[in-house]
Length: 416
Image (cartoon, rainbow, N blue to C red; front, top):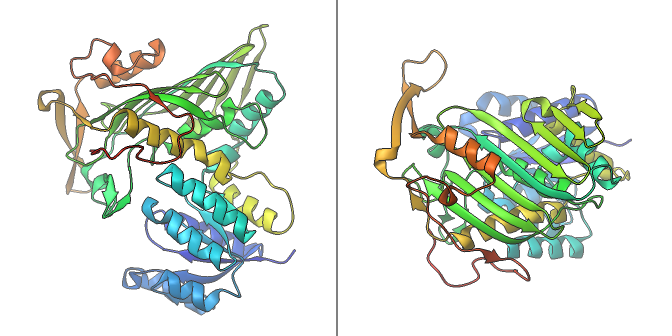
């Protein structure tokens, strides 16, 4: 089939992942890279020289890329900051270009809904880079859910501890921010590093193909140990429209690194999925046991492969705006439930020095919440928020109703 023509925005940070995947697909002749926009080209002289030699057009400005290459492009890939997802996507749609946009889809629920409207008006497709739902393990869990093999899900929960150093919050202008100027960012574990795993939970909780379950109420507690605008630690519970209770526990200030683990307690089985290659075990109530994982699949690559297949006329599974909407709705509900971020007391924070890079003499730093690992594991197993446990810094919040919720924030309150 004819290769799909791509435009790419960015070469640094996570955009390098996009560039590397596109390079492979170009070599396989399933894609052509037509143009790249990079606002700091002086930082990427070698890759830009190579791209130019391959005939790729280079721009410093996204708008210029669209204006010059509009007729050549089938799709534009947007591994850009969270606050740029919606405006950059809309610009492409208005020019009749399909979009592959990095997760999360948007910061606010009204932006997701406006994006759905723009997509419908344009007649083009929008693919969201929640690659986890394309992993074989998540696909198999979803298939068993659709087939009724798990029965109704009573509870779905996840815990994850990914320590992040100071350099994580200084790596770009929007990290750790609630806003960038007048634009919401709402950065944090549930909206960035672990957004994939929150999105997975809504996706597998629905028994319907290509749909996610929807949160209808939420109670969240947002905490910070770092001196940032947003939160670095979160616990929440939510009721979904499927009747499922969802619990999510995540932090960038854990004592050790423990990867996201998801448990599903359902009518006919219990499912445990681990981060490590999607290793999944299903314990059926009738005594059967099933194990599977992601094998050699590369879900990041599958996001591009799926987009290419769809643009070539195949009906390939992908993360749509509708599937990704629940994650944004949840994040908005979190901040509505907990508009003020709670400070972890300094006496409960340990500062640790770590190497800036392997074998480096330069140092970075971590902030660790004292005794936190035991707390988050207990919260996960007992399905309790931190305020419901014997934690002196735990602070309770209000349950927030998400039924008929269409705008963040719902009232003119101060957030932070």
